[in-house]
Image 1 (cartoon, rainbow, N blue to C red):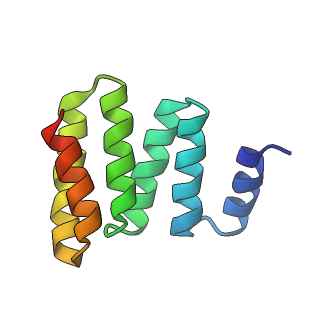
Image 2: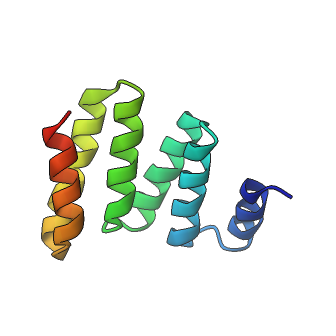
Image 3: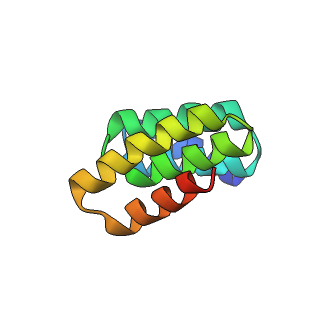
Length: 101
């Protein structure tokens, strides 16, 4: 069984687990299933709007696909969240990435 299949199996048992959804998105990105990865990152954010890593990773994914405007939009939303929850590390990473787009 592949890592992706293992995550999918766990998601069937607990579809609203935020970390599992994020892990699934990361695995899909690693496998270069980019549309599915983007959908999984969006699901992660829908389950927990404060999960800042999902914003950053989705922003990087979009930028890597040349979708700079969409990447900027996601990163800007993530920056707002990072400020709101006081995550200065994520705030710095997203701000730096956004500044270099």
